[in-house]
Image (cartoon, rainbow, N blue to C red; front, side, top):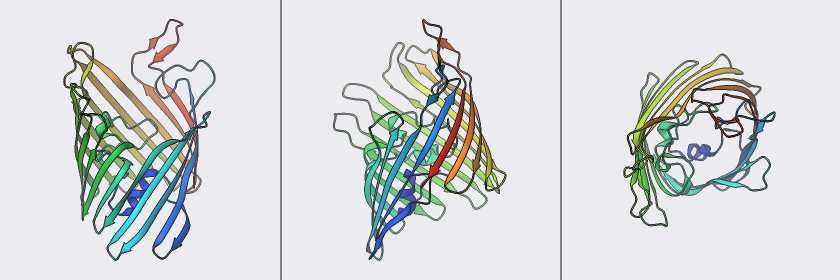
Length: 330
C-alpha cells in the first residue's frame, strides 16, 4: 500500500517513489539522503486532461530531486526534514513539492510545512496508476499543501493523522482527519473527513472519504468513495456538491511484470441542481521493471466524457490517451 506510517523513514519516503536514495552523510546520529527520479512521459491521441493532440505527442517529462535528513536528538526522539523539487520539461523553473520539518518520538510524529493533508493516507488506496487520484477533490484533502501542521500516531494496526492548514488570508484555513486500520488478513479500512473555508464572506468546502483495500499474495484490490461540498453557498451554475469514486486492481506476475486497472468517476452538482460528469474513465496499464531503479510502462486511458470541440473543430474534452513512460529512480 501507499499510505504513510509514522516512523520518520516512512514519512520521508512520501516524497519519492524510490527507496534507493543515496546516503551522502552519516555521522554521530545525523544523516542526509539524496534521491529523486527522471521520468519521460509521452501522451498520444489526447493529453492527460482529455484535449486532442493536433501534433504528434504531448510531452510531460519531469524530474524530481529530494533531500531527506534526520538527526537523533536522544534515545526516543528524532528530528527530520524533507525537501523535494520538480522541474517539467521545457521550463527552467523548479516547483516546490514538499518542504517540511518535524520530530518523531516513539509512535508519534509532528511536522510543519508544505506537506500532505491527512486524507491522503486514504485516497492513496486507489492512487496506484498513471491517471488515478480523483479523490483529492478539495484543497483540504489534497497533497502538497502549504502551511500545514501535522500530527501522526501509529498503534499496532491503527494509523491516525490530523492536519491543520493555516492561511494568511481571513477565513481560508482547512483541516483533515484520517485513520487507517489494517487487519491481519490483508484488509485495510480507511476513513477521512476534510473541510475548510473559501474566504471571508464565502462558503466552505468539505469531503467525507471511505476506502477499502485488500492484498493477497500478488493481487491488490482497492476502492474509495467520497462526497461533499465544493462550495456550500454556491448558486446558479456554480459547482456546489460532488460525488466521487475510484476502483483499482493490480496483479504482479513476477518481479518485473505487473498489470493494473482503474476506474474513476466524479459527478458535480451545481447550485441550480444541474448535474454533470467531471471525470469518467477507465485505465489499463502495464509495467516492466528492469530493476528497482529503472522501469517502463504503457498506459491507455479510455475517456468516457462526451467530446467537446472548439471553433476549429478540435476536441478540448473527452479524448482517450495513450501514454508511454520511461522512469529512472535514484
